[in-house]
Every structure is written in C-alpha cells, then in structure tokens.
Length: 483
Image (cartoon, rainbow, N blue to C red):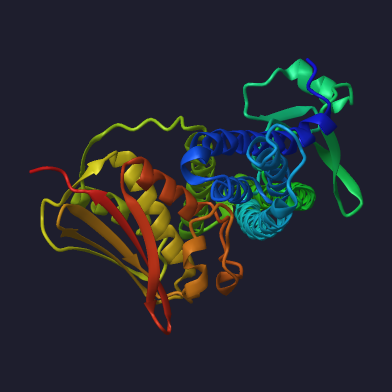
C-alpha cells in the first residue's frame, strides 16, 4: 500500500486555499458584472473588497493577497473602460490604485488576525493534548496501555494513522490496521510514514510510526508536539518497565522470605514436638519400670500434648494449602456456639497451665451459619494464640454474643498486644509482630488460617487492641442462623 508523497500531502491544503480564493474572486466578479449597470463600476469595486475580506477571514493572509491581486485585474479587465483589456483611462488610475491598496491592506490585516487566531487555537490545542497525555501517562503502569495511549496521541497530532511497536508487540491506532503493512512500515518500507525510535535515558524502548495526514491541523507546533509526545511516552514506558522489574524483585524477595519462614517454621514446629515425643518415649521404654507412676503419667501426657501440637500444625499447613488452592470443602450447617465452647474448654483444660480460660455466652441457643468443624478449628487457633502470648496467671476470655444478624465470638487476652499500625497485618501469612517475639512466638500461620476459614464461611475476622496498655481482641463474625 502506497500513500501520496509527503511533500504533496503537506502542500495540498495550501493549494486548496489559493484555489478557494480564486473561486471567491470569480463569484465576486460575476456579482459585480450583474450589478455594474445598476450601481456603476466605481461602486461595484466594493464587491471585490468584500470578496477579499471573506478570503482573508476564511483562508488566511496568503490567499487574501492572491484574492486582492486577482480582484484588481478582474475589476480592471471586466468593468473598467476600455473593458476586456488591461488598459485604463488616466482618470481611473487613482481609483484602481486606491482599490489595490485598500484590498491589499484590508486583506492582509484580516488575514493576519485570522492567522494569529488559528495559531493561538493550535497552541491551545497543543497544550491540551500534552496535558491530557501527561496526565494519562502518569496514571498508567502497564506499558501496553501506555503504548496504546501514545499511538492515540500520535494519531491525533498527525490527524492520520499511527502505531507503536514494543518488542514484538504491535499497537496500532485505530486498531483496524493491517499487521503486515505495519511490519513493513517499521522496517522503513512504506512511503508517507515516519518512524522514530522511542528513547529514554539513552536506551531504546520501542518504535513509533505515524502517517502524514492530509491536513496540518496543529500547524508549526505539530512537529514539536509529536516530539514531546514521543519523549513523554518513552519515559512512561521506561518507568513502567522499571516498576515491573522492581515489583518482580520484591515478589522474588517475598517468595524467598516466605520460603525461609516456612522452612524455619517447619523445622522448629516439627522438630520440637518430635524431639519431646522421642525423649519421653525413650525414657518410658528404658526407665519406665523405675519411674514413679506420677512421672510416667507426666511423660505420657507430654507425648499426648506434643502429638496434638504436631497434629494441629500439620492441619494448619493442610488448611492453608486448601485455602490457597480453593479446594476447601464446606459442610454448611448450623453452628451451636455453646457446643463449640464446651468442646474447646475440655480440649484446652490441660494446656492452659495456670492461666484462666473463661467462656461466656450472653444468651443460650446462639447459632451461627457455617461449618461447625471449620469454625471450631478457627476459634481453636485464636484461643491457642491468646494462651501462648498471655503470661501466667493471666486470663483469656472467650465471649459469644449476637448483634443484629451476626453471631460474634471474641477472644480477649492479656498479652503484650500489637501496635495499631500492625493490626491489619496480623492476618497475613507468616507475619509475626516484633512486639510478640520470644520463645512463645508461633509460625505466623494461625491467624492467617483463621481469616481464610471465616471468610470462606461468609464471615469476617478482625482484631483490635484491648487497652492502651496491651492485650488483643480477635473477633470472629458469622451470619446468624435464621430462627
């Protein structure tokens, strides 16, 4: 596909302007000829002056000067005696001279005013285009979207087709363009198209191409506008690529951090209970008959507690895997809060040490909508977390109540608490607050799993400080079962 020569394309609007000026003079000549007998040839010269002014206002100073010259010769040739010749009587010389001077002066002034107005309009349009493009580029972080916006801006500036190439990706504007033609354009094989490199900080980030339009709508500002658009677009693309590279680095660092945390967690939370189980079992096997019955009972209890701890940890890992894979199966049924409290009170009786674990229920028969097993596991994680961080002989309170259409269970501890700026992060995987560092610190999985389980049941998990001095309150909210 070939397009007209770019020089001819650029000159065509000017040629059309001069042809239009000649047409205006022709119309003025016909009108003057029709009215000459009635008005006299001296007065019909005003018709030519009016034609010059029309050409100046509509077409600019260049066509206006042409209209003045053509009007002078037409007036002399057709209306001044002797007619149909360029000769004139001596008494008509002043009239013709004044006519030419007035036509040139008025046409030139009106044309210059029109040209200045057009230049001001073009400059205003240039400023608007650059402002809108800059605002759009600043709000974008995807290089393809930036390329689309750049192609659109180039097409608007050139008033024709445009395209951007980023690597092997072609981004045309408008989109309905032949890819083979565009590949040829970027290879420099199509006349009438301009191709420029997109460069930012001395590095090429892509290519831009636009076809020379039939009208130079932005006038002398068009080349500058296009160059500024190219520079802005290249900088935005480079910024997007840098942001993407930085995000990939951060994602890699987070992945590595999570991997290290998981390995550390597995190493500690698997080896510690296994070591306790192994030590207790070995002691019972080798020295069991020599131990006092109370000692043997303590060793058996240690094995049981550490096995439960190990089982809970493995269960947390499995639940986290299921949550992230979307494979968690819900058995929706009414959740009796009182029954869950009873089971958890028995489970934690031997694990609370000297801490007080208090369960309170504002009303009997409080029932939530969800999965009883998953809710019990979520609440168990919260209670375990509260006991771990509450010093002995502190109190951990578990309270259930209703609020409108919600069933709310809150676990309040007397631990060190969490700073306000970290409250939103305690439900993140492997997040462990600096205020809770120490031997009691967990894996950072428990509350993350709580949030996932509660949200899977259509509920919400939140946390807040119990008091300015410390403590944490974790709230689990589920829809209340319809009565």
